[in-house]
Length: 433
Length: 143
Image 1 (cartoon, one colour):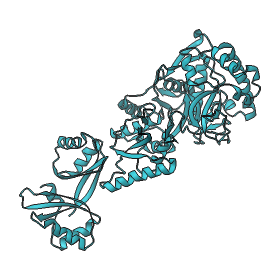
Image 2 (cartoon, one colour; image 1 turned 120 degrees about the horizontal axis):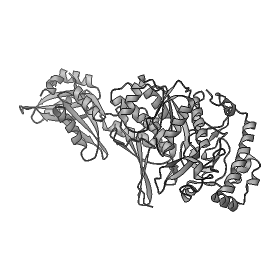
Image 3 (cartoon, each protein chain N blue to C red; image 1 turned 90 degrees about the vertical axis):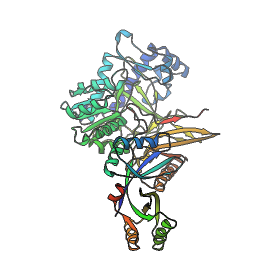
Image 4 (cartoon, rainbow over the protein chains, first blue to last red; image 1 turned 90 degrees about the horizontal axis):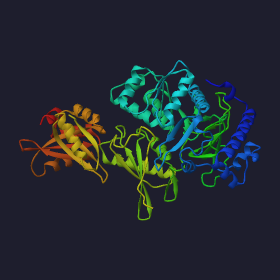
């Protein structure tokens, strides 16, 4: 179902004309109101008058997370605080958080985009949405909440944590949809099962899952454990929050970027060159309608590619492939680039293994070592040592074949690895370089 | 004439074994015989207990990966050559022993050897034909 037929199905030509007009406006506005942009444009030798086509976008310099930190907390806002109705902040694992602001109209835009996302998942005002994204500074909770209300659905503002209560409400309130991270939903499915709840008999029929990279295999596992359709949603607080792109239930193949509000590019993370459609690289977004906190060519560090083929759902927006990793999650092991998500997909190809794993990177002498810890599931357990050793060898070989890197595989006890309620931290890097 | 053994995956780390024995103690389960096979990283604890179903249930509930395997218990006189006579008979018939462990009965006269064979049924048939005393499960659980 399409929430905003007019914009979501605009012919490409009209869409691009709209994007150009909005881009020119925003570029001019940030140049004239934010010192940071004036300096960086001047340094790159480009002015707002140079933007005469969408292709000219690539002449503008990138904005990155460090620029947000340097202008902490409100330095990149283009409107006075009196026009800001809300701020959010991302967890600053190193140093200070990155802060984002919204005007009243920004909040309305965001609510519409989330409503579009829910509609793309087949939801209507008749649905009950269990929102297990965290409420607070994190954009997930409130972003999904406003979108669900905009759609007219009933929202359960559950937030994260309190596993037992989550399970209780899933049973008693009968929500038809759930929003959370994919790993948290898998955790809930497991926890419910342990509490003796038949998680397949819940009324849930769809999951709107995002905020961390996941895999097709994990999707299959979630769908099997809960008997639902699992869909991918994409967003990041700097750009807006959840609802930047959403997978449609009709296509289930890539996420439609809401291009009437954002321009998306894919670049080579090393050279910064713009890559053609279809090639994998780092996603870069420009917000073209945001008032309080527009961002020009923001480097997300998320790895994906764009698919321009027309989707059967009727939306004309380009689709981005499920994010397959972060350019800063990328591990370089003895010169080989390794994404945790690639290891995950190897593990999930082995019958009976659970998607619970941890990567330990260390250095022996001058050699990097990568240890892959995998939980032994009931299914793969054998009472014979050699069968388990065979499994270790198979995992080692499959990773070597697929990634070209030699790892040490270590089997660990079930449920001994940490479970994550937010973004999963799969990598422990012990290297001292 | 088969006997059920439970096996548990354990990482090589302090407290691994005691968390199993604690779970069994709390459920009032008695261990009749055990063996621990290990590599540098992990081990497999194999147990004969007085209540197989309950032991598996409580260990699963405690979060362990638990398996159930059919093994064979053979009684032999506790004297030199006792074990050899069994192995000789099996070797002649081409039966392979995957692993084995032994304990001595309370009376002290006989040893009980627990075998895991690659083909359990034919091993039992051969042992019985050759006159060895294969112990039924109930007997061993209650020793």
